[in-house]
Length: 168
Image (cartoon, rainbow, N blue to C red; front, side):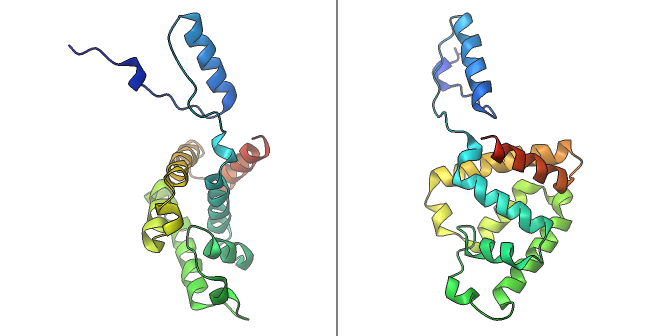
């Protein structure tokens, strides 16, 4: 029977108050603990990227958000390719992907949609930034859980997510 190294155990919390409450409980029982990162996950760049993605899944034909998504770190299409009077081929493809992803959300799951987005567009900004990459997947998992808890109602999850951003 191997002993468990208490220094190798990590606990993730959704917000800072939960983290503080947990630390107080551990201190009451004289259990060692340290807070590694006190930044709220909803205060990260990843949170803004996912918020934009959710907006595009909800309204895939809203050109302003699709253009923002296309030029974001998710996709990194150069702005010169987007400055056109009409919808460029790249934007049309992205619109169609967002429509498909929103229709397949229950089947695929949010985490797989994000993963597919990253694989399809091979964003060097996200690949090279381990914190951003990690935060994206951590937040995607939180969104996935909320989607399951809300019967994959993306409108409800969008409002919940927006509330998290407003209170972070």
